[in-house]
Length: 129
Image 1 (tube, one colour):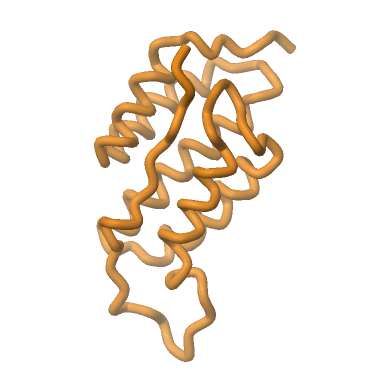
Image 2: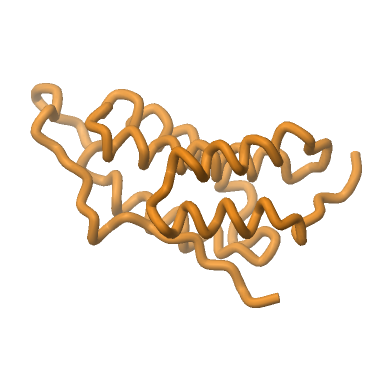
């Protein structure tokens, strides 16, 4: 396997899109990059993609899709804590947990009433390079 190029401009663009709340566009940008990877960090980028998809689904009211992706993205991201490529993975996981907490809790009935709390939508924090 080759090393991951964390200087690829698509990573910065994907992070910018994520942080701007453009989750579908972030997914597209990072998926393009992810498809070319052969490095050990490939699952990390899959986790970022799934985090964007989870947030997109939550915004759109697709609670089932949001739940599935929220759980799955954490599985992919967790092995890369506390950080990967300068990205604060531990903070992202904590912020994702806070954002999805109510959705991921057990409910007596399906939580159709839940809406994403825009105050809790996470950002990706990356150290300056």
